[in-house]
Image (cartoon, rainbow over all chains, first blue to last red; front, side):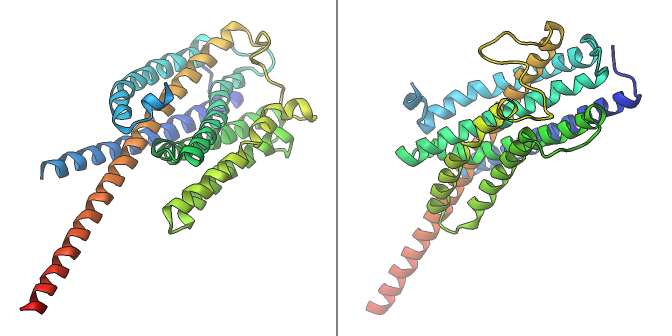
Length: 47
Length: 255
């Protein structure tokens, strides 16, 4: 059963929101840097 | 086996397979893990819904400890055999471990407030995990504090090896000292004290977090290699340009 937004539910949702935002941001930032590095590598090997 | 995959070209080939595999595993495990954590698993008879915090808190703690241990092993390999891949791994994994340790500390504090009635106590488990987080930050600061790359790397590796002493302290702190933090529910030697309905979401989330950490670390290793390659190319161009200029100046001097 999904936790209600009551006294305990508030803490549960806060934890899941923090985890999703922080890990999602970590993955997204790394993926953007990874793609940029790969594209840069490809471009420089072509020129 | 390890030396076979430790070559950079083999790492590139292996990571081309592992990266999509880990990404898929992370999406599947975290997706299903969230479903069982928030919907399918029951609330605890004492803690109520607050027990669901465990499915984020415990995997984060495992990752924080596990990544530090793996970087200490890499530090040993880097110091003894001066292996480039081990050096790259150290730098790539440390910020990831720091984020998981920070997540463990923050979610632990949020769990502590409704259950213990306090965000923080200076008990052995909480303090030793905070020390681990400081060790992660310390390594990152130290690596940037030296101009000499090799010196920074060696000192960083020594710091990681000394800091690994904190890992058993964290693990056994709940047994050695009287702490507010509960003892381990899952151990390698005994049967878990957790019910299967709670163990299942915990393991799914742990698997998802591990796959995600693997994905991010592999991507960070690729980024570091691409940067090193670019820097080497720039240095080669600079060296060629300097050599050409000097040769032209010498020609002018002769004529």
